Amino acid sequence: MTTLKFSLHQLRGMIGVVVSYEGQRFQVIEVLEDGPYLVLQHSEDTSLQPDQHGDPRRRVPHTVTIPVFEKNGSEFHSRLLSLDLIES
Image 1 (cartoon, rainbow, N blue to C red):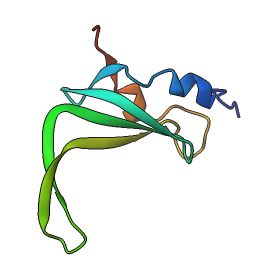
Image 2: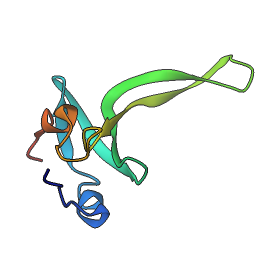
Image 3: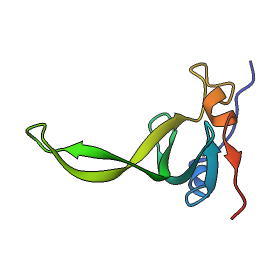
């Protein structure tokens, strides 16, 4: 079985990159080491964020977390492979 070598430093280099995911425009805003995962922020869509009591208080950008690898660790996750780079 082959293992993919992809460093967190390389992933962090993707922060700020604008991508298309499921036909919508997102920007990579963070890399989570556990996984690892890419965190994408929608460029226009917002959602209501509830406070500690569950009451909606403010609008925040919609975010999506994308796993980098499949569970077996030997292949890139299909959701990651579905990202398309958008030229800025």
